[in-house]
Image 1 (cartoon, rainbow, N blue to C red):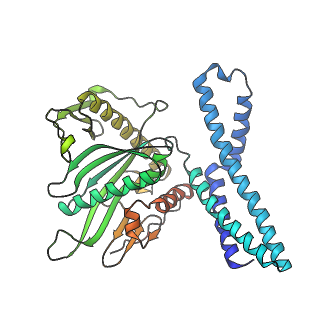
Image 2: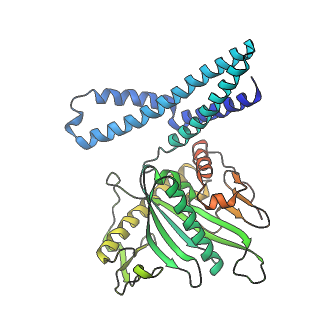
Image 3: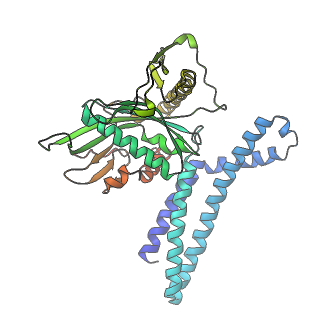
Length: 375
């Protein structure tokens, strides 16, 4: 088989292997049989919520298993077609078969990423919290660049973007911001972005045009729906109100409507100021706190399962996950997976899917790459 076609076959087989591994194939088949049997039970709908949970799980498993089997079948048929074409010297048929393999490879990659989103909260909306590191104006500007990058990524996926909290830098950029992305699988896709992001560039704020390094941290945690129970003891909270501050105009508020909640046992702090009503800001801050506590629980579970993956526990300045180099050359490198891009402008405009897909796959395979940082 010609090299191009073989490359597509190898890519599809790799995707299929990861699909089967992420599903735990034999267990998934048994579980689907169990769910199909439960659906046939007329007493299932005596408990509507339980029945909906069963139907949801059954649909997800059935779609994933069917998609995997369809790719396997099409791969086998297309390879057979190409081999027949090559044996008969039919160049046109061989070219058509290779084109079909290319399309199948693209489809298998999409199905692979979807199959990786099997976590308890992966389908939920998500918060993305961005904080500038030490470095004043440089880091504040970098944090604002990240805010734009994630907003553009969310818009590309058709997600609704809301600015929940915002603290402007003294001269430029932002000290911190919290975004809310609403859409299917928002948390599942974005969760691998938690960590420290490093920027290297010629500073636009330095009259001597020196190269500067800036840091900002990103923290991603899911919106908690009614299916996930998180208990909060209000006696363990400190609730402060303060005057909202924003970019100006309609964001200016003359009342103490902004709310900050501190969870004393963990030290987690959340805040909201995007509503004029203190009551609404308080409710949103409680939603954020529930989400942060749940994310903390998830991190602890994952840390037990994989103690060597530091980015799943505490996020600190030593835990860099990606470097963005704008000078002296153009390169974005993910330090966990080794995925690179030589088009930083595209990445900063929201082209993040390849980085997210590789990080999701790494969670399934358990293979840590951790490449060296770039200057």
